[in-house]
Image (cartoon, rainbow, N blue to C red):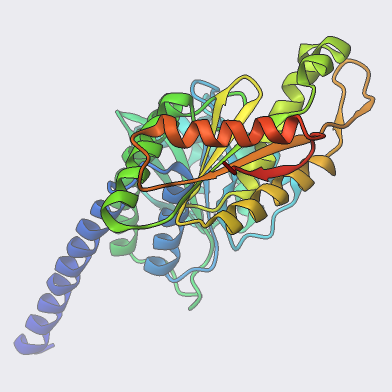
Length: 353
């Protein structure tokens, strides 16, 4: 090889290194620009698909803090054909596979890791291999493994290069810190039973959205919901059954909301949905969608397995330029909810003077 050819190869190698570093810098900015846990997971997986040119990516994460195991979450996989058993498969933190990554926190291909003597009997490794994993990358934060990133084969069927493994190791470190921060933020702002945002978060975000309306002239709607005759339901079936109902009603609210909507627990069985940009007509339609989904819902009584049903009343209010603070908008939604309750329940009503 001539000196010029050799020089060209060296330059090409360093140009690739510089490009990768620039990419990682942009990725780092993107990952640190959000504390939305679900959005963050989706962003990390999409980055992996694009950077490594694969159609399969998944993240095993700890579903709850200090649970001691990793599992796939509904939003933490792309491309893999998974069964319910796959979603329920648990990788314990205290296993040889995780201990290995604690000692060697870097990306490794399946062919390489299968040669590790201490992992020859690892059921987790055999499971991931059967799943279609081609490369495994540990997520790291604060000196410990807080998840696993699993990628399938490349679309070109080529082997993963050392540069690509180095890139994924650095990306996983950035992702591990971002995921850890987002999880801590979620724990501080989410009601753990229902998965809805807590009251303080609701008030803060509502104030921000009202300020945006004042400055930019945008729309804003607020839904207030309440489970009909919930006290009677609790007295009849018990608080355990009541909790199951609240969890399922909250799920309907979360599922119906869009990414920019804010579902929250106002208090007790009273839930709300902040809808930036929504008109009264759009908010009413959303209220009806949620109400009908709850009406069609069947939950099992945890005490005897019997089918239970509930209904929901919904009140709607929209932002007015004369609103002084959160209280004005909330009071109108609450009054509309009161009207829905006292005009027969199981209905959606928009506030009218």
